[in-house]
Image 1: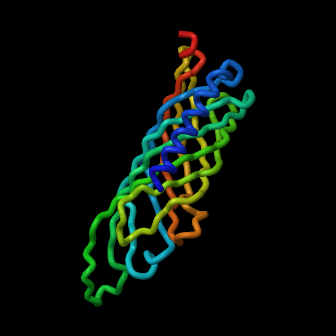
Image 2: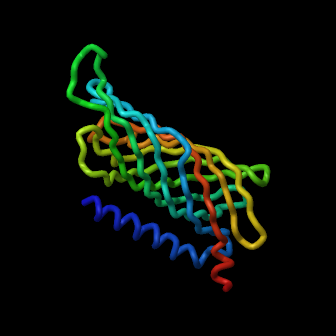
Image 3: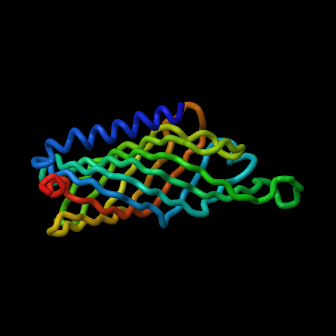
Length: 207
């Protein structure tokens, strides 16, 4: 089921890019890659508040992004990202109570699809925000519930466009994972930095 949904999402992203190639002269479309890390993840809700705690250790996300101009200052930014989170599991009990749960590590894997609007101002700066779709592809584990669902993303950043068609941007952000999910009560609040490189599709076509 998860793989079927993932294949449909990837096909939709590829179709969007393919369809937009015919209109990139007017929209100023760009295609690029992103890397996200250097932040924290706070997980809360569900059983983690009662029996054990999950503390963030590290995370990273690799993505493919498509940026389409709407007008002179507004752009649509849609991405497909693979994210991996490492967390520490520890018992949530009083110090003088003996338990058999020892401190250990666990990993969480998700595909994220952030779809945002980017508002540019003062030539180099922008703010962005929008919808976040999460697809949890982690192996089953007893410490965390399935986080497939919907959330949100907001941030700001700086962008620089080179004359030869490449643009580079740095985007500090906040992601609220799985805030709309009827199957679980656990949520993740992610704070990090996204570094991206995108290239003007019009220049690729001209070649």
